[in-house]
Length: 172
Image (cartoon, rainbow, N blue to C red; front, side):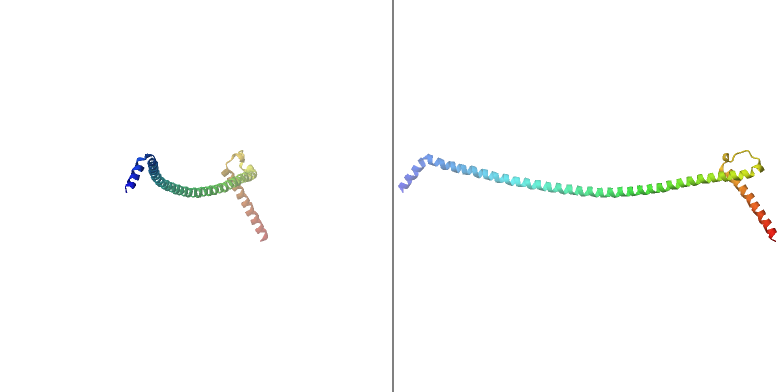
């Protein structure tokens, strides 16, 4: 056993050979520390990645909800626009119909006024010698002109009645 002891002491005295082992052990410990540190960094990065993924997913959902909401508002706005355009077209159509009716009515009124003027002028010509008036028919208002026409119609009814009476007296 002595020999063994002696051997061990000699090995211990030789420092150079152990220094390499100590360097290896020291290197191992540093690598283990670095490895553990990297593992904790990886775990930390995984947590951050999960957190970021959750926030991105949440943001994506929020944006999709916002897009859905905006699309819904867009659909409502388009419906309202369609309703307003339909109402506008309807009112434009009504305006055009009323404008045509107004134009037609104005034309008919103009024709009627012209007919009244012409008729009253003709009637007045036949009665002028009876009345002895100097006012022109064109200077009268339409009611005065209608009065002249009415008087002429009464004259014509009288003439017709007289003609009928004479015809019936001839036939009897």
